[in-house]
Length: 226
Image (tube, rainbow, N blue to C red; front, side):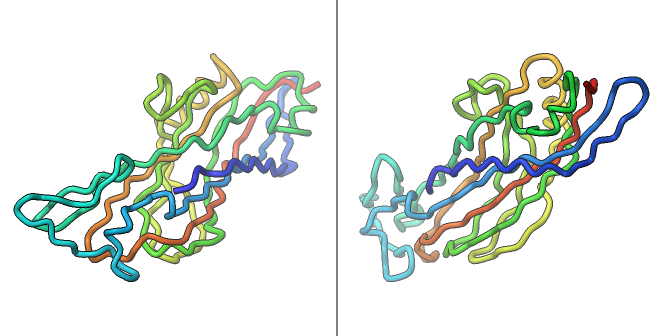
């Protein structure tokens, strides 16, 4: 699978609302693009049988074609690719920078709230379904989902092979609350990751194609106006 391409798309919604005193709120959107390519699964070519993963007998000795990237083990007398968990670094986001013209109306941005996250499957030529795709946020210096402070933000539902469409990401309330607290107390920069499990089976379609998904996070900022 190909490392996701970062595509930050600030979409200003022109929703500035003055409240009492010198405070105000505004909403805007930040988007990230995720691309998954089945070619990066790199299964051993010996496991290919036309358009399918071969039901290759491994016999009593348990010998199967394998690689360091994709271990293949003998399960029920068939060569079976081991389950994998794929994690990708989507990139970092500076909320002040992504707020664009909205931030120019504030002397300071004091807090932020994630209102919703939507996704749009732009293209999907994958010959196999995906599992749920988890979205994580963390400090800008985080290197993977195991780094300190990295927290799940939401889950994009599984996709069937060739399926496109759009919908809402299922938000993790604890992750959303922690996102606000981190913004208020620590930093306005975040790094995002995605994670999905893959478990290929003998007889399943040979993995090919790719999927491109746009994920848009609509947020509301509050602060003091100029």
